[in-house]
Length: 206
Image (cartoon, rainbow, N blue to C red; front, side, top):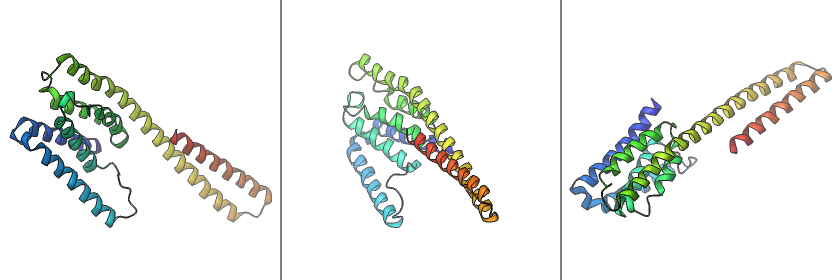
């Protein structure tokens, strides 16, 4: 379900851009982009006022949808495939796998292919093919980065859960015993659990 909703947000963003650039709406691309940016700023301000403890960017479907839409509109406003902003799509490809399910990078790739397909013959065809080819080349690399990141995150959560349970059990045992040797053993277990937790946290940051 999560993969479906995330993929849907990417598809809708690409579809909207395709509609805009393929219809008379292309003449209003600048005000549309301005409206998207203004709406995003207003939304962020309202959310920050109502949820002061929440981070500015949480990577929600709405946020990624807006970023994708605004980025693509900016690229087409500055020349499409020949735009100096095209390289930002590389960051989007790698960033998406840390916010969404890794497989969504291929959904994004298909969406980008559909959006830029009609622009292939605009300008240097070989250069355009190389640029689109670079997206195809980077997508599997981005996918495997995302898979590895998810694996580390899952392992870190599992270690955190297990060490937390060990520390709770050790505390219960400490309260039930008065034997100094047993208390020393419990403290040793607690120290090892804390060391394991710290090591897992350090690995997740690497």
